[in-house]
Structure formats: structure tokens, C-alpha cells
Length: 161
Length: 62
Image (cartoon, rainbow over all chains, first blue to last red; front, side, top):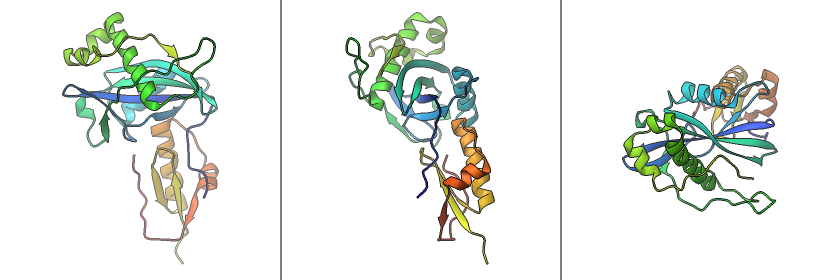
């Protein structure tokens, strides 16, 4: 069987679409609650690509923010958290975000194995950091979002591997 | 004699089955719209598989 199409290239974006279902943070996306991979061209701005594709496929996001990077799939992977209103979830599959420990680097070596849940955990910790530090993010998120993020230890943008 | 049917699939789970023209068009549209990928007709056809069941219809899952 021929290989399936897959995102390739030296720089790729991994998008995590999150929304607030009552007081529960959930992960969704056009492919379901999994990383949504995008190819990034050499001359393209990563944030602009993610914002444009999300608008085209899902709808207007509330927030688009890069949260970490790591090496994987023979590429540099830029992780993005995208916050959407519940009205955009429609029939996309969704699941509650699982809590987990972060993948921690050793003193001079990146973490060897990084699970999706760990990337999402860090993405939401970074969003919690932005909710305190960035006035735009603080303003855009509802009180319910701030309450949901209060359980996350704020983290800066990080290299995860 | 009916036209050969092909299937093209994406790592995200999306797939399409149809004639060569249908598969090429749908795959290029999916790659561009959902993954910001560019592909040529030849690239799509090189990764497509021949389907011996002619009952499937062209379509998309994402």
C-alpha cells in the first residue's frame, strides 16, 4: 500500500484546539482530539499560517499562541494552542484534557519521549502564564477560562525536546 | 468499461475514493485547506492505491 499523505518539511506546526465545556477544558479539532499538523513554508510566518488555516477550517479563534518547540518527525515542531468558542465545536470529536506531569529536560539534554498529553499540559500552563502576563490574553479569556487555568502552574515558552 | 477507482489517504485519517480526477482534486484541496500542503497531480497519483471495489463514492472526512 502506498504511504498515506503526511505533513512534511523542516518546520511544522502542531495545533491543539481547546475549548471550555462548562468548566472542563476539552481538546478538539477537525481530526478530533489529536494534534493537528500543518506544513510551514520557508517564507511563511507560523502564526499567520495557523491563524489562517484555523479560520478556514474551524472558524474565528479567540486566541492563537505558540507555546513550545521540539525536534521530532525529522523537523522542528512548533506547538500552538488555539482557543475557540464552544459554538465552533459543532460535530468535531472532543475529549477532556488529561492532566499529566511535564516532560522535563536533563541539565544538558532534551526529554527523550514526549507524549501529546505532556505537550498539551505545557501549552495550558503557558496559557495560564499568558493569562497573568499578557493583557490581551487576560482580556480575551472569560472568567470561566481564568478559573479553569487557575489549576495550571504558569510556565514560559519552552523547548520540550 | 468503468474507469479505474483510486483511494488516497492522509495520516490524519481523512481519505477519498473515486476516479483519478476526483481523488486528485479532493486530495489537493484537503492538503491545502487543512494542512497547508501543496501537491501536484503526479504526487497524488503516486501515493494513491487502486481500489477493486467500485462501490465507494468520492468524499472527505475532514
